[in-house]
Image 1 (cartoon, one colour):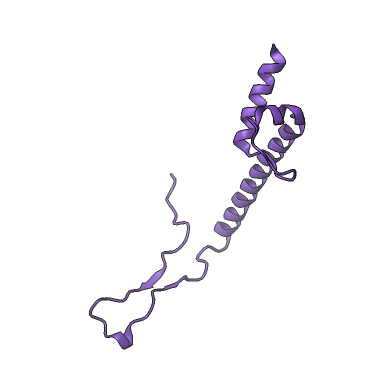
Image 2 (image 1 turned 30 degrees about the vertical axis):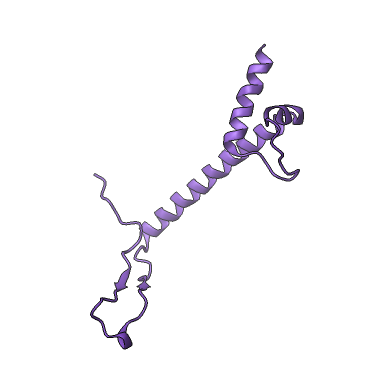
Length: 108
């Protein structure tokens, strides 16, 4: 059975009301308590975060590999005349769109 565990503790807030005298008014302050996760729970969270970082890195590496396999002439042709800086890489969405179009072209 899984229990829902809060991601972070709720902050303590001090609010200014309309009837607070001007000399006592102050901005809202947010105080965070110390990390409530310790021991096995903290280790579990650290492992989960490491797995997620690894997953994101693998996805990004995959997109970089796709970008490297797209010929510059295809990127230029499919960009629709949009000028892209020489050092600016294609977005993930643009990469996928261009790869799909390039595969269709190769299949013809």
